[in-house]
Image 1 (tube, helix red, strand yellow):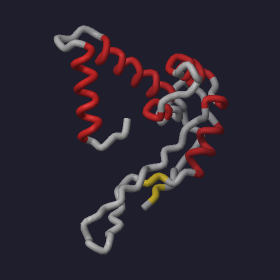
Image 2 (spheres, helix red, strand yellow; image 1 turned 180 degrees about the horizontal axis):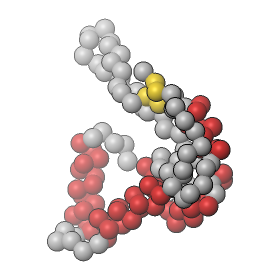
Image 3 (cartoon, helix red, strand yellow; image 1 turned 120 degrees about the vertical axis):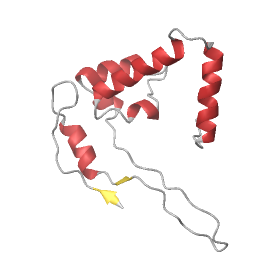
Image 4 (cartoon, helix red, strand yellow; image 1 turned 30 degrees about the vertical axis):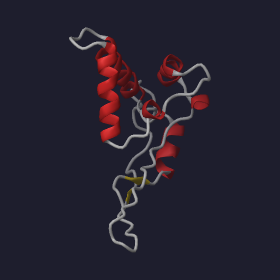
Length: 129
């Protein structure tokens, strides 16, 4: 069951409206649930990935372009987990700051312990990364 956006051209988080984001959102079909596709034995479920629209790196402007530059890898690619915030660059910037604080800030846990916790949670949630 998809949800169609009700408005476009809103604030991107940096005070500007983005036509590219609007088009991406308008054309997206967002699926926010898992569909049960039952196999003959009635025990297999097939998850359906949500399609979350994003602004490609080469189309980024303003704050989004700055944040993309900050988090891009050596090859210029931006991880999906960050790219999904591209329709709201402020959210992306805040996500990066939170992650940096949690993984590198003061803590009784070492960086390796924090990474191990992140890997365990990802595995438990069936995240492939």
